[in-house]
Length: 298
Ligand SMILES: [Zn+2]
Ligand SMILES: [Zn+2]
Image (tube, protein in one colour):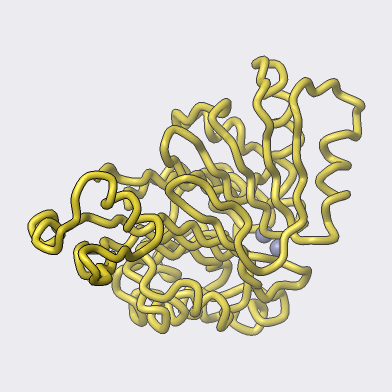
């Protein structure tokens, strides 16, 4: 089973710093790239960290704040320069489609491929061979959705057991499709002749206060990437601006029983991020703080 590469492209909250770009996370799966947010400079971050921008198939925008969307403007134009012909899909909270269109169309650039801007609410957004991406509600100062990448479960037949029950040839694919089949007058169910390996789950939740919907969707997830704009000392500010402290992010990870937490969207006020990490780890041990270019293999 090959690993899924998750590359954190930009980790700064609101404004960039000399060593942190604006929000974006890339998931590399089956030769395609899925981008979660596309802050200003994302295409350059992709070049620096060795990602082929032509492979971007879907862009999932959490919300229409400038630091999460401005990168779309440059990226779509570069793709046209590269001669792209396949469509690009951009998902954005329902009602904000025109904001994305405006940054695509403002200079009347000629873009020679199709761009589908899709408004989303809670629920499945993309269903492809091998995975699903689901949007879930965040709690931020404007309508915002996080995204859950969920790989399909893998099913392996227990051949010995299946054959003992009379399953052969085409029957395997029939049972896989219909979940059961009558063989020799007896119903044989998929679950009695197979084992299920759960698919991997990656959650992206920024920008947001800690939210029950994140805890629900991140239950037992392999990786949770969460807003961690502030330290404990700025807890009041986090509440006012509808962001999370690193400790709050850790509490979400703990409640969800996630396997690993990555803190991102770090305020530029923190030159030294040790305190953010320390406060989070006091609640949830398997936490790391994202740096631009960080590669996580799930
Ligand atoms: Zn932001
Ligand atoms: Zn925001």
